[in-house]
Length: 136
Image (cartoon, rainbow, N blue to C red; front, side, top):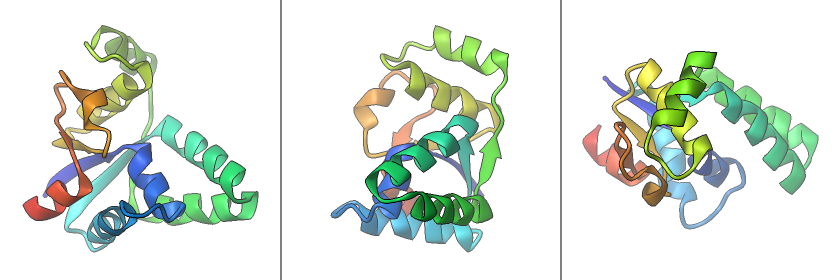
C-alpha cells in the first residue's frame, strides 16, 4: 500500500474548494479514506490548516475540516530530531523540509503536492494528486 504525506496545498485545495485542483485532491483524499493508500500529515500541518481555513472562512468551518481530516489520515508527531533533519536537507524552504522529515519518519513513498518545485532535491519525491491516483 502506498504511503503518502499530504502537503498543505493539497488539503487547502479540498477544504477551500480551489478549482481546478480540488478535483484530484478530493479524489486522493477519497482514495485514502477507502484504504487504497495511507495518508499522513505532519503535526504542524494541522494547526496551520486550521488557521488558514478559519481566516478564509470561519472557525466552525476550520474545526469541521480538521475533524474530517483527522478521521482519515494519521498525524506524524514531530520531535527535535525531525527539525534537525530538516535543517540539513537541501531544500530552499524549511517548512517543506520539515514535511519531508515527517514523511521519512513514517516511510512515506512521496509527498502529495502541487508545488513540486519546492521539493526539488528531496529524498522524498513530490507527486501531484493526479500522479498518485494514477499509481494506485
